Length: 230
Image (cartoon, rainbow, N blue to C red; front, side, top):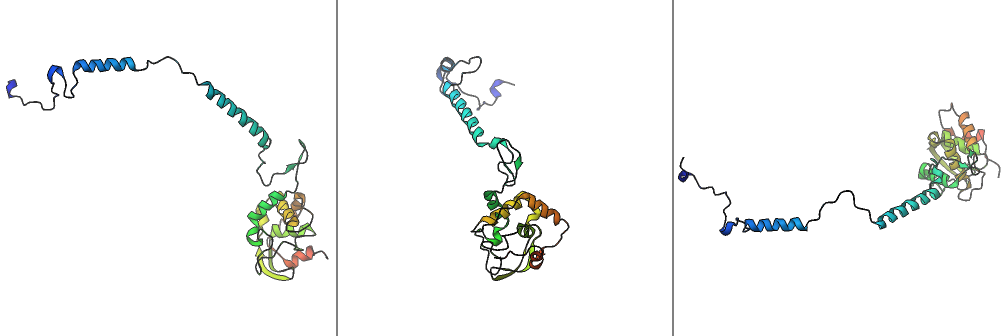
């Protein structure tokens, strides 16, 4: 086919005068720009650049501080540091023994008991009996432990007022130490002055109630553990 019969290629770049492209840059100018860029760019170097000394000292200082902080605040990396049920050490490096802890007892009380008896220990009039100044939580600790482990239902009289409800066996899902901490807290909070409860005592009562399937009534509980005379 004769070239004269070909259609013109409108997409092909047209060159201007002196070999300039459609963008207005000549071949010579393009070569010049490329050479300039090649001279100005930073040449690559082999290896790695050194970390500024300030950053090195900063990280070293942070590592030293972190190690010092953990040493002082880790509780010797004991798993029981934040465990409400963890016993305290009787002496440094000595055997682990239970020691009633009012702070742990208060936290456990708020979680398990305060919804009914209130954080103030005053209960709710006509619904839930008070624990503050109550003879039911003082004296013989077995009475309170049994109520926590087995529950307490039916009519009960506390400080001259009668209540008729059901206390669930909240202690069924708690450990001996947790129950001991709750009982010890209640027996010494809001003006109460009874002796603390040990986890060994809770374990003893739990074993005795192993076959019990129903909550105590007030009459049953008082028959086994009468209120102390004032």
